[in-house]
Image (cartoon, rainbow, N blue to C red; front, side, top):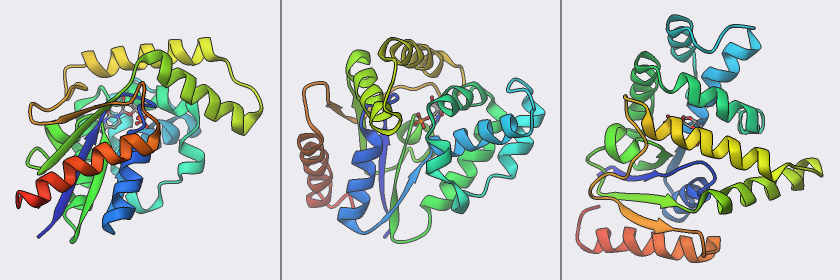
Length: 213
Ligand code: C5P
């Protein structure tokens, strides 16, 4: 039986760390679907192409190879903005969602994290988590992470970027960011990663005990 865990939430909510840890805990694969949208934005920017042309973005999406996503390059803050601009395009989403589903279908299963995993990509996933935190907490985390790498960061700019990206992701017509009706909420504003991991594990174990996976 294939074992799926769907995790959604806004930027810097901690969902990626939780997804990685759950995948390691259960010995299953992990796909950060944000990287697939980032890869499309990155490919367009590298080629000097605009971010608002649906046909060019769809072609870039076709060429994305999920086994060759380089987190070290794609995780850069500026590609988050590019990703959210191409992510409003239904043609891009259709292509990437197909690739994400093909990834998840390989036994023994996978943890996928993103914005629409529980609602669109894997609506029948037996465990869905929606991970969130206040914009200020998320901006602080992202700012500390960037300062750790570059020695400096600008909290106010990062907070504004996060709020703009949240608004775009939540208001787009195709697959907006929102919790699936059957998602379990994990609010991490006042939680460290250990506490969030224990909360996530408790939801997954409950589903396992109930025979859902
Ligand atoms: O999670 P991450 O910050 O890497 O995502 C970058 C952007 O990609 C998001 O702001 C969102 O616009 C888009 N995205 C999406 N659907 C997903 C994952 C990411 O629309 N499943």
